[in-house]
Image (cartoon, rainbow, N blue to C red; front, side):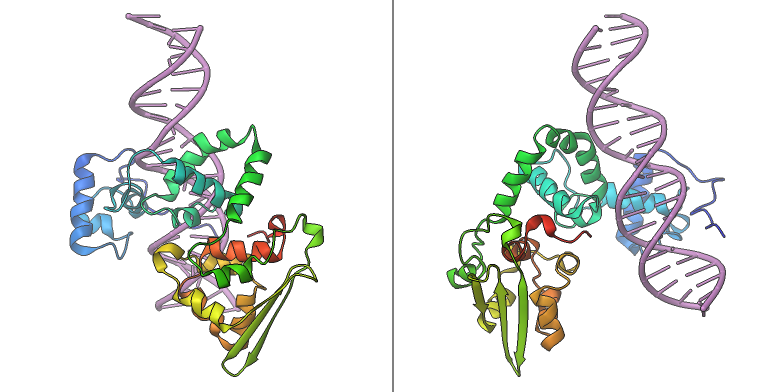
Length: 256
DNA sequence: AAATAGCTCAACCGCGGCTAA
DNA sequence: ATTAGCCGCGGTTGAGCTATT
């Protein structure tokens, strides 16, 4: 059975929004919010379907929208995130404050895709190096635990073994890269991660779950629930990316 | 100046996920 | 367990703008 159309085609206006319609929508949402998009147009007195109203608000009228051209930093962020996430525009947008998924999708399709094409390989190498840069928001102790030596030369050299032990409140995680490159990370490591500054950390728990289903975090979570706190608070993509880049080949990150 | 090709981006479409009945 | 409705997402479209011929 097919789904009913989102709105009746008869009597519903389509196409570009007029300033008057914008104002009506803004006024209504400012007064009553947007609990029910489907009911909104009727209540606000707009001859639009709810979907159209939602789109207009999300992509254009929201007060926190950043207008104007993308900075070089924003473009680089999009490129990096796209490399990891693919066409998950909303996930990418979540990490670019003030930018919408639609806008990012447009920028990617019109500019960035073309820009990347000629020297894709060079770009990827550069980006991977960038991702493996030291994490300044962590202490030298933790950084050293994550980055015990130079990065592995090739994926074939890397073996990943992750274990976690739970002795009441004590939690120890071993990350082995080569057999001769073993780091022990004690509970101070995780405490430090938990207390890391939000502004520098950001959050993307979903991404961590996607990328690192068998990560130390997941194992910790299974062992004593410690990891679940991390997911709920400061799961930082770059941080985890760097961490697990140490224990596995970047190119072997699981597909989302 | 006119025609046309290329580009941009707001808006639409259809699908899948989620949830309540 | 099934169905219906809503929301959000990603892909696509097309009007309007700009550059080129």
